[in-house]
Length: 305
Image: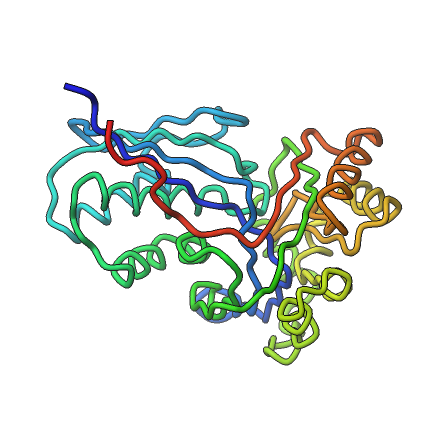
């Protein structure tokens, strides 16, 4: 008999804006962020197995944990518990999003695993069920499930879809060295302590207007990341790809999330290719990627043999 499998694709993200308040008693920082899903994807292939196991392939696959700490493993277990399923699953993670790069590759794996296990096991969980499980896994997992463009609040997991007209073009300078999200937040706390302002939605009015108008020039001017200074404190070499992108005419350039990936907004698809070439020529990236956004969230792309 042909082997049953489900293949799910989930996007990486760029934070168009990331505003971070002072750390709270629960250890979390209140956030207001504007996510955009981009066409740099993770794929998760789910096949029947005796137990829940994960393997990884693709760039930096050797850096991906394959034990119970892997978010995709945790996602499969949550689906099994919620639906009362005793079956196992082999989850093959095909990496496309940089590992520990601030583009939420692990969260994309988790979102894809939720959708893949639901489809493979025929559990029939609702989208609300999957979103609830996603929120239990991590702050960025619900957005990887939703995709497109959205405003995230709370820990980033409380999402409101945002309208973005048109298509935006990106070039990414990827570093093989990762940055720990926890370390970047700790550096942010060292820099700001209790003086960090509490973010409000008013801060991003120009950015939201740019998205609504499909105005890439205005969007480039409005890109913002409160964690960028902290990321530069930990990895000063990130100043180099930021400067290269600016010199190459990027409409805007920002460290993506907690870094170290640098995202440059381009005027067009051709300009994104030129920005990527500038990163390569200057030797300021281990790899370069180009992408468009917004794109859909986690979805089944193959279901069958």
